[in-house]
Image 1 (cartoon, rainbow over the protein chains, first blue to last red):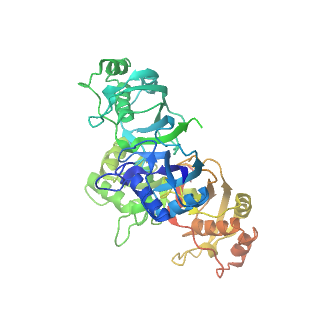
Image 2 (image 1 turned 135 degrees about the vertical axis):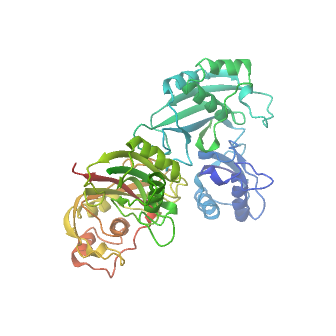
Image 3 (image 1 turned 90 degrees about the vertical axis):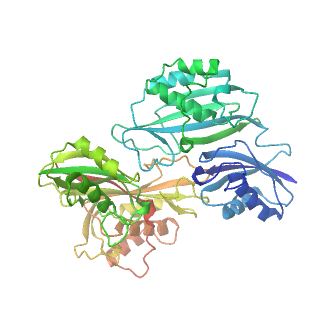
Length: 258
Length: 258
């Protein structure tokens, strides 16, 4: 048996998310289907981040073990030949036998992209949230920075999220209007692409999108910067901002101690 | 009557092109439909470049005249309210009464984007041509530069193109791997985005895509750099390279002497 680690990029628009579901196409299910063709029987694939329906990935990491003798370059080619064009394996490598994409992960980086302008950029429809009114980016960044450090993020866990251990360490949480991959768009007159990036040791279900919803309300001036701290510390769900839509969110990378 | 000039961005994927056709949705037809709602009767719209089916625009320019008193900002809002999300009016301004988007144009810039790498980038599927084998960008650029100046481009005119005046002045024709808007993608391992940009006083039907097809054959090493000159001068259509697909092409901007 050889354990492999692969890196995937995908456009999440037409999938039910990373994880296999009772119905609908999942990225995990499609990767497992492609590996079953290679191996001749079911192969279990572990993903580092369970991205939700509609969420994209630039650098999702997954792991699995194969009995068949096969080299990493062949895995990339064979998987891409079987996967839909919206999912691409961009890298593969043999890994230590105890490597597990999820349990070995030390940290993850997510990026959320907002198109702020009266008219939506037609090329950003699937990859950024359109917020029309003016947003104060400096205030949003101030509020984002309040999340750096160790906090209990229970308030930002989606109703369906059943994790009881809700403390997470956030290494960086910033809002910028700088280059915002995968697309650095030429900015339309009076429009801007706003980029939120967060790196931490783990994330609760819908946590990043819930944070972005709160940041946008602060950017709009509906809430003070300090509201972010209040929401987290008081775990006050009564006035929680609407969760931002999934199509602006990208799993950028996963880090490991190797 | 006031003459207006508008700038449009659109994702050309689901349209039959700029120009009205017997069937299918055209950008011109949709803009005219939106203006008819505003004006109460048919309004003729002239476009600077007649982009083909599937071709995108970052800065298409169109002109029309309205009887109704209306300001430019209202035109932007009203048109965007009626147009599909894939077409956005990004600017509008009153223009001299003799302004005509096509006949007043002095030059146009087109950009063609190629994703060169084994695996296609899932976020570029609709916006770049996937060419898998190695391409020699320096050779492509050398060949592209041969087109600068005044040439008879008859060989690159599509069968359906009926223009008899086929001499065009090309101000710039370059191939680079630098930033290539509207998306500046993070490059996957071993992959690159190749960008062809051409500025000239006018373009024949399918001309840019025919040039790109030839450039790619030169980049692949199937042809010498000098082949580009031979094709143009000899008007030799016998061994013409396949025309590049439309989804990699963008009308970037139109210039006017104002």
